Length: 147
Image: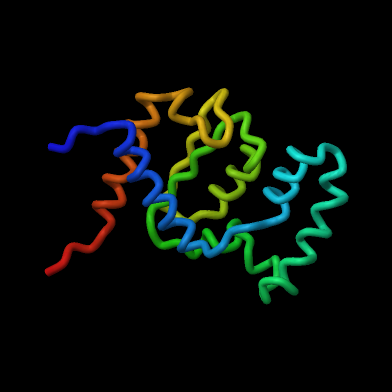
């Protein structure tokens, strides 16, 4: 059996996350854009974010409504595991909960108390590893076996 290392978990988690993001398409929506701008520009972010969002269609050729993961996640036909940190400013816990609520079953949600956007493992090391491995095992069981 393969020894489970932190690096191995990060690689596997990145693959799983990438597969979900590919399924959702390029996932942008007003909340995270405003959140990220707020981190740089403070209270003016709600005024500036619409100017950035307005540029999506002319620059990318698609409307912002097509880039909303909360609408697209219902079409994902594989298990979904939404993880978030309770202090995340990029994708707030409320936005993560909304994404979870819109997802089809089977789905799972876990909020790591005290964690932000990328430090979930630091706040909940063993529990994080256990839950990721359990979720990946669910994905493995959900994959059709070649005949």
